[in-house]
Length: 466
Image (cartoon, rainbow, N blue to C red; front, side, top):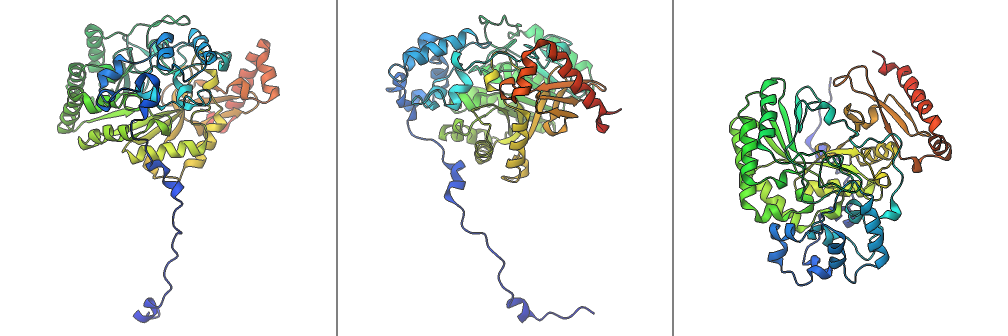
């Protein structure tokens, strides 16, 4: 028989243990940069707040060549740094376009170490040789294009590349084969805005009833005119089997001013989101923040407008060396994203992109970061670290490799739901391998042996067997 507990006994029980007061440093994610910070750059010293918040002013004054970079940074950096940047762009697969907003967030007192400079302005002195396994279109998106600009890889999802321009060009862009203008290194695959091309894509989507999820990307949806946001949205919403749509844009991270001052664009997006809701279809925004310093009070004001309109925003981060490759930096980014109502979704292991080997890091680093950040914030604000398998295997959970050799840096993945029976190889940057691994990759005769060893080990793994 269960003994009777007197109320007095309950009252007399000791109070539950309480957590100690939090360290104020743990709330750093709420400390967003404000004020007229842009005035620290000579070119913007006399720019008013109204001008700086105007998206048209931002676009017009973006830095697109070395002379403009020199003019913007007069007196801030050395001639040696400018020469280093010029050498970097001469070898870069991406053309130059950096908004005044991003230029203002870079620490020009230490530009070599700055994580934002690292992402957008290449330096010749930092560049490394491309990995021998590199392919310009490493994800083989063009191989899965039934019509130009539409990649159909996953059964129920397609990627619609509506255009080939962006508000800012990232060094690490996985679509450097198409995005931006031609460079000295790369002649681009053309994906200009073209209504006829779009109609061919819509016709294909209509013909494939299994397609329920469409990503609208490019390029960047920020660069679409309001009427084009409407045109694409209306066309896709009219297809009964399309249930989910995502407008992909890095804009909130590099030019949040558009969300504050381009009412027509935001109204067009809102109208499509609301129409989708009435049709019981999901229309969301996917964006791309990589470092906590990219999120300022301007960002918060911009994303508050998006939140007020009931638009869901998710984030996809690229793991980059000297940018966000530490658990502390990544956790601060995730908490800051959550603070401005953006849901972290993916952290990508850096794709095998031409000319940016200095930005890639090891799979081991990604695995460590995911282990360290889990539990640091809510589960729905904790991203999955993924490898977008080179060769077209699609996104694989970084932990799901069949084999990983930390000496040669080769990891092997399968993609049963995408291409059953195929093996996909991801590789760590050679300069971060132990000496034995570096020596083997230095000898071209070893390359097929390295891959064959990895293949055999992966096939020997029980979970890789059919």
